[in-house]
Structures are given as C-alpha cells and as structure tokens.
Image (cartoon, rainbow over all chains, first blue to last red; front, top):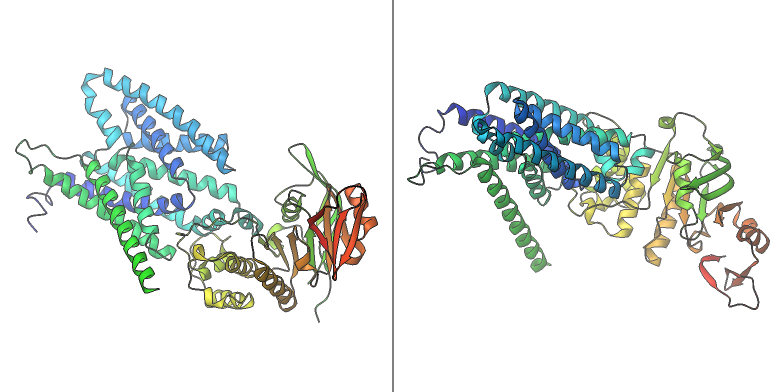
Length: 290
Length: 268
C-alpha cells in the first residue's frame, strides 16, 4: 500500500485530526443532504453556504473562530430565509435569492477588510476553500459535538420531515406541524453547511451536502440503505481526498500539495459520474432483457 | 351493524381567499359510511372546501363541526390532488403506506409487526398487494391513486377525503377506482368525500352530491339536487337537465343560443 500512502501519513497529527473532522462532517452532510435533495432545497443549501462564508469572513475580521462564524452566519441566514417566507416554493426561491445576494455582498466587504490586514493573508483562503489540516483539537471536539447533535435531531425529525416533504397537506391533516418541521430542518441544514465549510470551505461545502446524496439516490431503494450509501460515498471522498492531497506533496519536485478541498470535490464529481454510468448501463441491460 | 352518525357538519360557511369570495353560505353534513361527491368545474372551490374541512384553511364565517375539537383525535385520511414524487425517491410502496400511520410521530421507533400487517391489509383493500416492493416514484397514475388511498386509510380514518383522484385517469381506471372506493366504504365503514369535475363516474355510488357553482353549494341526494330549478338557482341563470341514453346533460337554458353541453355538467 506504499504506493497509496506516502511516508508519515498516519503519524501526522494534523492529518489524523483532519480525517476525524472530515468523517464526522461527511456523515452529517450526507444525512442532511439526502433530505435537502429530496426536498429540492439544493439552492437553499448553496445560499446558506454563501451566508456561512459571510459569517466566516466576519469572524476573520473580528479575529474569532471561523467555525463559530460559519455556523452562526449560516443559522442567521436560515432565520432570514424563514422570516422572508418559505411556505410556497416560489417564495422560498425568492427568499433564498435575496439572502444569497445580501450575504455575498457582506462577504465581499469582510474579505476586503481581511486583505487590508497583511498579517492574515491565509484567512481568505481558509474561509473560501477550508483548511482541514489546520483544525485544532478543540475545534474537532466542537465539530464532533455539533455533528452528534444534528444526527440526533434529524433522527427525531425523520418521519414527520419525510411525510411533510412528500405530501405537506396530507401531513398537516395527519397532525404534523409542517412549518415547525420545515424551520427545524432549515436550521439543521444551516449547522451542517457551517460544519462542512470547515472541511472544504464555504464555497465548496454544497458539494459535500449535495453530491454524495445525489449519487446515492440513484442507487438506493430504501431510505436506510440510501442514507448509508450517501454517508459512505461522503466518507470515501473525504478520506481519499485527504490522502491524495497529502500524497500530492511528493508528486512534484516543487513540493506543492494540491488543496484538500479540491481533491474532495474532484472525488465527489468522480463518484457521481461513476454512479451515473453504472445506472445508465444497468438500465440499458434491463432494456435488452425486456 | 354500525351506527349512522354525523362525522362532519359544515354550517353556514363563507370562505374568502385573496379578497375573493370563493364559497358562500355552504351547508352540508357527512354521515358515517356515506359516499359524497363534491362536484364542480375547475376553479369552483372544491379543493378550498376540502382544505377547509381539514382545518388547513379557516372559514371567514360559519363553522365546521367535528365530534371532537382536538385535531389529532379526528380520524381523517386525505388524498391530495397533487403528490409530486420524484422517480428516485428511495421508498418502497409499503414504506410510503406505513408513513400514513406513523409519519406524524417524532423519533425512530421500529415499526411493529402489527403496523406492517395493517399496511398489507390496506394494500390488499385497495387491491395493490403486488405493488408493495415497488419504488413509489415508479408507479402509473392509477397505481399511485390506489397507493395514496392505502396511505390515507392505514390510520383507520372514519372519513376519507380525496381531491380529484380521477383526474388524468383513463375511463377504465376511473371506473376501477370508483368501484374500489365503494367497496372500501362498505368494508372499512369509512365515509368518502370525493371531489370531481365530472359527475358521471360517481352516479352509481354516490349517496349525496355537494354541487358547487358560482361560489354557492347545493347538497342532497342526486335526484333532488340535479334538477333544473335547483341548478338554475345555483348558477344564477336558467339551465336545463336533459336525459340522453340514461344519462343527463346539464345545458345552458337559453333556447336561442348555442347549447353548450359542458362536460363538467353531465349528470344522470
């Protein structure tokens, strides 16, 4: 396995912590992302990532933890979307667009303020594209705690959320508090996007939220297996992405490693392509048999 | 022998939506195990009336009386007009039906054997047992209607509301669903309220018609409601009820004008 794992990979603490954070966030993103895709809220997920970016950039200006900025920014964005109105799909779309535009403007301002400070040139890179290898142990613990919280909340919300997603009026008639369920879920997406911003950055966090679930939906026939497959696809992309990024340091004499977020996103796209190819081939086989 | 009792009593209801009066002074009752056809053209207010009965819309005047005020204690099944299911939704038909039973409960309790038995019983009741393992997003229109009915029936409601379940079905499938609903009504002792813009297919099974036109409603047995005097009063102009080959066409009553046999107004 030496061809895959360059020397020092497993003994490197930053890599091990990064992998731990990556696995936790990949699982949470896959679970929350599956419902996000099924509810056609991918655009909202992306908008929340942009709000997370504004939060992270704001944290950079204030000199506080980027994770706090990502999560709080994203939660504020979710609150704003709900406040503007999300009852109907068209309203939801408009609310998302409004929040997205405002957040991007704020990000531009905050990132500009950060660049004025020459001592923090790495912050912009961190906010936009993540920094898995520079996650501290204390941040790791916060990520882990938030991940467990999101998974428990989602498990509790699962059935009413699924019911409300498939048939909101029938769910209301059966006694599901649909607007409360929807609000709770949007907040869970917000926290998840904040978490994945740490792994692959605010700009790319939608890839982790949407990619693995979109691929898993083409394979699974039951919720449980689809959730499991989505989680595994996310975990594989993150772990392999970390390994590739680490290994790439040794690929060129200049010793410049590829960014880990780039590797993760490339692998997610690769997984999507593979699954699409598999499905196209199996459908073709079905047609031939018929 | 099951007792006959009033399940829902709609009294003097007005509904306004966006400043427009959609329903005016609506009065009717639904009795247990009764088949009610909610008839009106597109946009007449059928969906509004159903949503109002469910408590999803509040009337601007009047009231809807149930045996119990607590909504969670009302045993109502609802089949909405639009259920958009993506082909990739990772749910088998039997999982979707089970959601009708426990989809309102928080937490991840494992489904019991009795839940699964009830799911199978309801799939059997709507003659869809063979569909249990199929993906919910891969069903035909007729198959999906049956599964939606099982989904609504699995919580053992005493009232089943269906919003335009016959729209987009071919004549054969339409007749199958209507006959199936009549059997379900008898066997499960459930009252059925079904909205449709075409009354023809319901004639053999309806105990009561609730006819909506011009924001007003006339209700009662079909022969008492679908009469020239009642419908003329409802439409606000003269209409005739013409019998042709055992069916009845409700047509514009102006003898000088073209006789427009509106497909929505064909009655036995």
